[in-house]
Image (cartoon, rainbow, N blue to C red; front, side):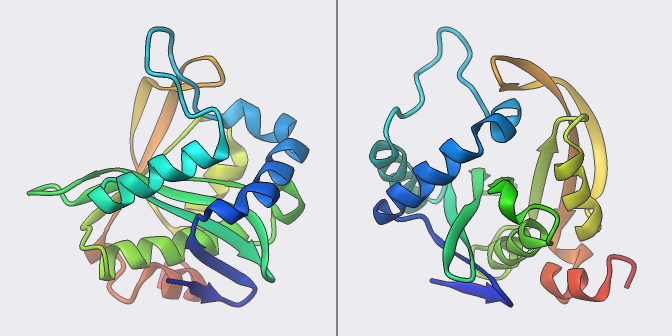
Length: 193
């Protein structure tokens, strides 16, 4: 599956993305580390290799609990959008997280990629609601939800373990009914339409 809008494409994360993924992560380490999820002491360690990470995410995708997407700009690997913590039953929601190569920041790549993924979640994956948690000081991520017109629903003290400590987050959410024409259409038309 490939979802494309202009120069931006999202597609499943693949094992052959390893070299590009590693290069982008290493080159952007200082920019990404303050926002990266970490494992609190005493918890199960995160995968230590890209291969293990992708295999774990594929298994979770088959189980319907995670959807990992690579983001490409003009055919080159540029980042990732992942839908995690997918709950079924009466909930039908998931959490969206993302990161991007700094080289592409400020060009509308991640808002477009998130919109493509959310539209897929609402139309093909059967989700009703998506949530995005953002550290209050992460102005770049806050700009993404602003561009997409996703409303803040709350504040969660010590919500996620990020960069080695429990960090506060602002919470944003969107339901399928809030964007009947799709989030990509809303992004292109402006959030107030």
